[in-house]
Length: 129
Image (cartoon, rainbow, N blue to C red; front, side, top):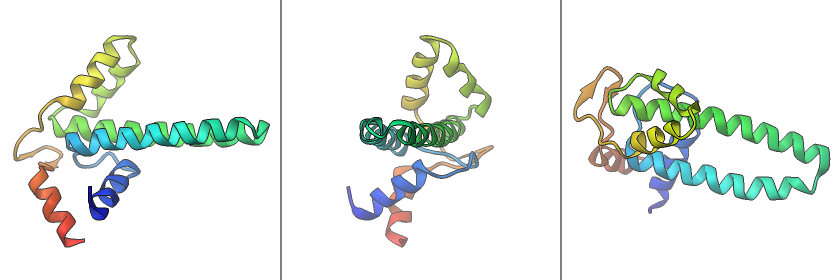
C-alpha cells in the first residue's frame, strides 16, 4: 500500500458525510483502522480512571458516527438506501447483513448517489494527489 493510498483510506474512514459511495476495499480497510484504534485506545485509557473513561466514550461515539456514515456510503455503492443500515441493530441478522453489504459488488457506472468508485478511479485519484 502506497502512502497516498493509505492517506485516501484514512480520509475515507474519517469523512463526516453520507454523500457519495465507498467501494469494498476502502470499506474493509477503514474497518481495520477502526479496530486498530479500539485496540490501542481502550487499553491505554483503562488505566486513567475517570479521564480515561471520558476519552474512551468520546472516541467510541466518534468512531460509531464515522463508521455508520461509512456503512451508509457503502450501501449507496450497492444501490441501497442508507435506511438499510438500521438492520445492523437486529441481532445476528444485522451481522449477516453487515457482512453481505461489505462484500457485495459495487453497482457499475452511476447510480443515485454518484459515480462508481472503482479501483481504476481510485488509482487515478491517487495519482493526482
